[in-house]
Amino acid sequence: MATSETKGEIQHVDSATLDAPLNAVKVDRSFVGKFWYVMRKYPVLPTFVLSLLVLAPLIGPSIAPYERDIGPIGDRHLGMFKTSELPPEKRDAPRYSAWPDGFHLFGSDHIGRDVFTRVLHGARVSMQVVLVSLVLGMFIGVALGLISGYYGGMIDEVITRIVDIWYAMPFLMVALIVVLIFGRGLTVLLFVLALVAWSGFVRVIRAEVLVLKQRDYVAAARVNGASDVRILMKHLLPGILNTAIVVGTLNTSSLILSESVLSFVGAGIQPPTPAWGVMTNEGRDYLSIAAHQVLVPSAAIFLVVISLNFLGDWLRDRLDPRLRQID
Image 1 (cartoon, rainbow, N blue to C red):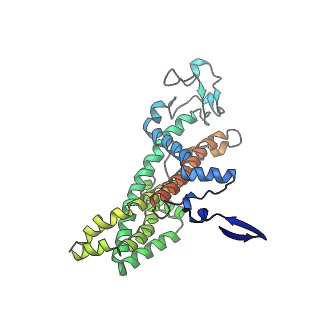
Image 2 (cartoon, rainbow, N blue to C red):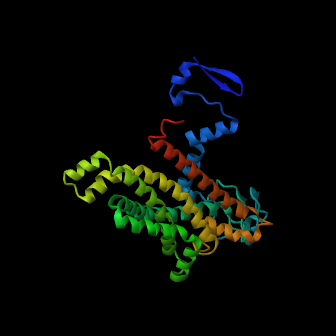
Image 3 (cartoon, rainbow, N blue to C red):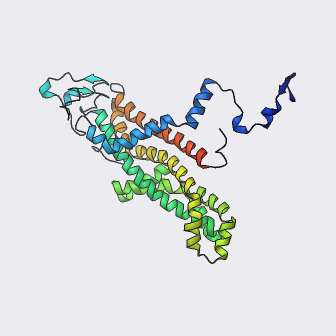
């Protein structure tokens, strides 16, 4: 039996409690603390939201009730959960009979287009752009991180200084300059977003490689005559994959925000192609009379970003053996 004194009171602590493992000790939490604990330990909500995000690009356009780029001008600024008041012959007819005639789940925009339909199509456009740019950025960032951490010396110094300079430059200014020089287009947007993604990988991967290259199995491979390429690809790359996955998950939220910002300022995806940033930009002039035009795509961006952050934290806790036993 052990004792501890707190604020003048002597508390008796059972020796079994002192000997119990850390994850076996129960911690009293408030309601908010319990909710946060459950969200961190079991990412139910992020998984649900991200599952919808994965399904939306795949089947969203197929289940979208209306055409994405056209709508009756008489239905403009229709509120959420509203049905068109136009005569049946002038309404925007649903693409399939199961959908109630003239019903708009998330309302309509300033030219009568169905907001729900455009959100579904916008998910496909945004995810395609983000995933392609993420893969490009991950390939560049992981390669530079491996080279920088493994070789060190002047190579490490040059790559590290380039990353430092890149972090010091304002992203929006660089993006606008690139768009001004090369023009607007999907290829330019992918290039700009890849520039956002790569730097986040370099520092983290470099730090992991600096630790891994000191391990005995790397030294044994070097003694046995393994080439640098073989050591990098066979012995170091598998060791940093978990870290790369976590960084990629967290970077995805940044890419979604960056794509939305660029589309909002007119430097990204161009109308009438639906993207969440484009929809927010189009609806800002009608915020006082049709706030749902801004709130719906903004809510989609918010839910996806916060879900990706939760999922990234969960993956980090589960894939890092140092944190795996701590609940």
